[in-house]
Amino acid sequence: MNDTSLLIRQGTVADASDLTVFAARTFTETYGADNRPEDMQAHLSSSFGLAQQTQELSDPAVTTLLAYNAEALVAYAQVRRKAPPPCATQDRPIELHRFYVDRPAHGRGVAQQLMAAVFSAARAFAGRHLWLSVWERNPRAIAFYKKMSFVDVGGTEFFVGSDCQTDRVLVAELGEGDECAV
Figure: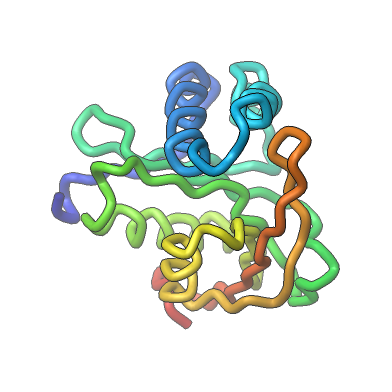
């Protein structure tokens, strides 16, 4: 996959059905083996249903970015205005709520291109910093975020169904341009 083969665009309500399927599948592939099936199902139902995706795609405080290689959805991210946990004290924080790349697209530059679009979307919300939470047991994602200039500022709780897990909270300065690194 090269730079010209990836199209990143803002999602619309018309994308809700496709995003529902893609989001649930990528979340399950990422975390399913490490969580009880009943907790996974509860989380999928509350976070990735059609009604939830439709609401998020129509919410002006949420920007959903969809990355396509030809006609195939290969990644997505959601940036939103939401107050950070107490450990993230940086000025004008915007949340990177979701960031998922389909497994066949790993290692092909998709994540870096999508992250550049995320930074632009967060700046469009007048943010100065981007924060996210990532499961402490996801070393691949943590390594990627650190490569993209995020720093660990603390932890927070995240529930998958009834299972309380610990997420690391990471923050990056947005900077002025289109680059991720600051």
